[in-house]
Length: 238
Image 1 (cartoon, rainbow, N blue to C red):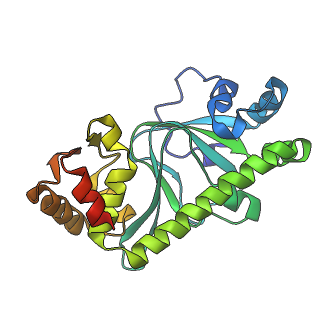
Image 2: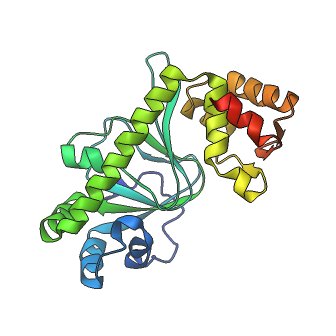
């Protein structure tokens, strides 16, 4: 990958190179691939080390492939004319982003920024298209991944339109499967990023957490949340 495709990776390039095939083989999208198929994809892949706060790409940059997160977190967001940021998605390890625009031949419509020190793999568009022509099963997996992404966006739109702020926050808390871990969870990222992801202001998000805590349904300590009354939370979620 050319330097312009690897912004803000300064200070990280001295790390030993990773075995790209080994990481690709662990991801659902590539698990059924043979070693030769992974080798072909790896030839068009490169690692991108990012410090917290570094930009992966900006809105308007050309899309020359897609990214996979090996470790760390990346937020996808856009900035309104008034300067307000809206976080569309937070991408964690084992997940990818940028596939749809890669196929459309469009520039990026969002900005991607690392929320923590992160390692990504950038897979070149030409390598992907070549493998799609060779392996129909790979094409089906990519279509399934894109379909899940679209379904998630539709669910988000439904949530923003039909559910209250409190219901959205409770839905986020419950989807993390905290009850299965004894009711304890840690917020995946900062409260301000989560607030934007749930289409709330940071103040509204904090107020909802405070209200739920005051009613004895949860306990909050920094980014740590303990669910105290699961049944009431489910009732409030609707």
